[in-house]
Image (cartoon, rainbow, N blue to C red):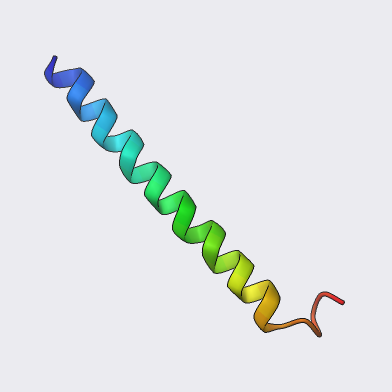
Length: 37
């Protein structure tokens, strides 16, 4: 049970990090339209 909880926690953190990186990429690409026309 403890192992499952730990795995869930790790998965949640990974999803959060992925979401932050994804948002950062979108902001970056829309902030610099000259780099990627």
